[in-house]
Length: 320
Image (tube, rainbow, N blue to C red; front, side):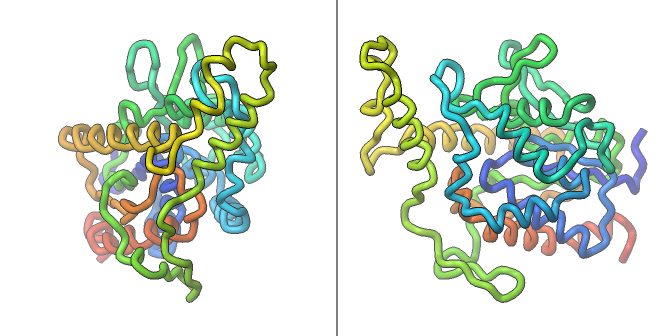
């Protein structure tokens, strides 16, 4: 049963835009807005799990310290039977380096995640057991990561059916639901010249063409080049099929942008039925899904997005 004052935070999917969730949570904490439960999808579930572990600061420090372009060094290219990347081992490493929490039951804040049953097309709620196994499922971006097999079902990214799982938060008992949607096309005010972040630092303007996905393409090419020349698979799928011209979107950009369009539309449909009490949409429309080197920019836009809605949130909570 829900309580009018129980605050549920919904963290949506969005790949590299997901770091905006860090800034959003920091703004909540700064304003002493309590978060009683979390519903997450894909990268939103990852950030939510670390926040619920009390280790959001560790994640932020790691991201700011790491060159965003090295993100794919944590991923293993595999033969593309069901996905270009096998993330199981790396997801466990990327989670365990920040926290020793292993199960949902270990968390300080109740958390649920959403995944998609690949065969039935149904939403699957993950709320107990091994955290990393659940994260691996909710983060299995179709075509990019191979699906995860859990309890007799092949699961992929929850964003396929529920990119911003408002309904899950209400089902958990939230009386007030605050949702962070990362897939709107609203563009940042700061993009033309520089992005100023808290503390007075500045970042250069966004470059004309990001090279993030090109690093993955190169990694894929090296993978295929390791195949023996006699391998029949290499005759049909090789570097020449992966390498794209500068005028043509590459395979990673095509997959992620296409799914991003789908998720944006799916979010609109879902929210027409089940709207959050507060909807936060950080201005990240200029970021492509693989712009992992824009960590500070994403964090700051998440922070700003919450600050702009603080008065509305406080009115709902009755704290003004």
